[in-house]
Length: 384
Image (cartoon, rainbow, N blue to C red; front, side, top):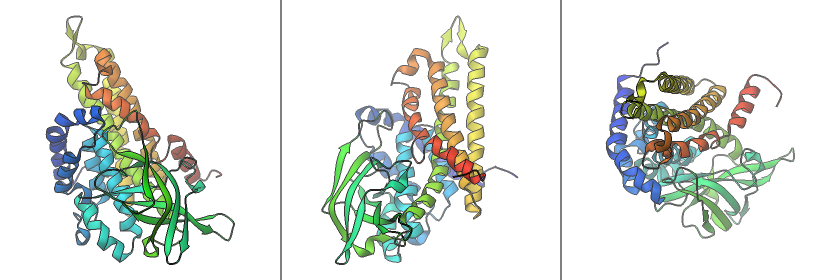
């Protein structure tokens, strides 16, 4: 079994690698320090077709596959995670629910703009009291006179407040199931709909060039046709989306982990201490070797999960393993890279400082490490 890339995937990887090095790396530090969204960079990514990678050409996509998206995310995250998460959330969380579960009219209306990168979509799942416990959703959507009336608050929503955000798909309680549990459905809410407002803009530890907002829905009314997929299937649909998204986050995490190796190798060849480059010292060599081993192992994990997904095989356990291993690798490598850089690793002028700030959220977003362990245990047959 070979994990070598096909010529097409390798061409894509090299193209995104070159773009990240030449177009993203020189400018992203300024955006990051200002907490500004990099519209110009995102527009360039749209022109490259990155937002349409896994979608069919009939809807404006590139006709590629989900693994192609993962390769692009890894290469972007080797340079910067804010740009990478904008792509990840825009594709796997913003457009993918419509592609997987939307009506023909929803696909025709929204996917061409989302695939081109002209517009971004967001995924409204997390709430102040419902993060890992996504089934604890409190947002409601009541069907009144042919329309859904949405009320509630969503938290930590990526891509939700930019000038090019076009929609958010939200989970909401639409009734009660026969067993007494809440019936959760997915509702598409276009930006600018009366009653849909941005709440607080978060002051974050990392991902500072990424957009993250609270969303508030107050008697927000949308047409009945804005139901995404089947009524009462919203929770199950979003679990499927999250399984796929974990593979993508694993790829992003591998990119950050590999970026830490890249920067550490370069710095070890430039920085002198006690009369020689620090790369001559075994303590530094071993630390960087461990970092490379982590990145390599995590990459194999997400390659395996992606290959199973594309083959139509069960991949929930493998996605959870990949996300767990890769996010751990990102956090460990960011810490070690900062140590290699010493005092300079604590300075924002060097990328490893940004990597360190960005790494922690990878152990939390799209399912915490604890949730991944829970999923793995359940897939092994242990009690729920």
